[in-house]
Image (cartoon, one colour):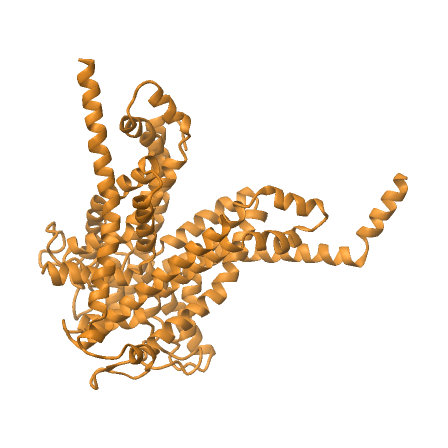
Length: 294
Length: 305
């Protein structure tokens, strides 16, 4: 009797472990499939249509009628909005992260943290809609930009969208520091600001790097929020108030009308594959930063 | 002696260097406070502004009516239904896989190559942009399986997109359970699986529920991954179509689509109304996450988290 109960428990144990292992294996399977499939589809531009990788990456001439899908404009657009977003959202996010871990009284944290969680939850298209109804008219009325749709509008929307990522990860970076660091600095007579700038910030640098890298990852992949405000022009922006496109916005804008198997479709898949490579590189950078810490 | 010390301390305190440092310190504190407050203020303004823009459109005919292709006066009934339908489908796939994988990593996996590979895959999957995931869904479900645009294809794409986040939630929740629970359970003869199922999981369920509901909020508003998988139109059997193999445009997709592609004259009305509904849903999910997690945890463990 007891033996059979034990036997059954033992059998259940084995089944459970296999099911759990299978689920974990599925994650590997999913990622591998994604990588293989997109690599296959994303390199057709080069292997089927015989378009050179070099021209794809560096030629600004995106002319599908001439079979010349140069993606330099979109790559530059992605780079520019990302730099714009991280230049504003990065320092701001780190500062609020410091505030949360070093200065905020519990009651303030109790308000700020749910607010940040709410910011994560707001759908990207709602951010885009807000940008469209608030930011775009503002830029139209106050700058040289004729329509308001611009690189700057996209950059600002993105800066706001990456804030929660940067804030919560940099807060983690500060709270995980050993308290002795701070105590030692304060005991030597340093003010709180000096302690933050000269002791905590340098010690938390790898964690902050992770916060910034993941902020960049979010900015690079963001699609609809910027598609609604960037103007979607196939041209380099004349200045920061000029319209342009990014990799993501051109994909979402052109894919619905692209025919299966056409050069246009292949080029769009190549751009998606490029985005995937950028994401993977960023993840490797995160790992590098974390390894440095430990 | 004491007077000497106090004199030199007060001299030091009033020296220009110290005063400058103290001033810099107060200034920095003030600036950081201002930054933090500005975030709350900005969020509050967003919410008020969206209610100001959209509140007047939230009539029953808008919330439950059918969308229109070319004329004004269309509603968003089927879109709201589709958003919930795809959300539920997605959770049906995501929760079992992600929770199992999370349990495996946290409770079972020994350090080694398999574990490393799972962790790395999950991290990579977590950074894949949702538009890229959408194109993968297009390749697999629309081109390869020849399903066309379907609710199921959309849900499966979202499953892949949200697996890592939910795995992480599971792991964090399990990590928060002290080892003494496991030791006590195994000490009275329970197997590992019995321990996980009857001791560890019930204790972690509150936190897990909070995490799952927050992720549900994100799935509800997901757009880029659905455009090429669940499609840009509602099914012919709308508003309430249960067939997962029919096309199913969600509310978030509808908001984007009406603005950038469609030709209805009342784009602003539909946009402002839809954006507000999405925002309200996110607020609801955020509140539910807190209340639901706490209530479940209390019921299963007798203590609030």
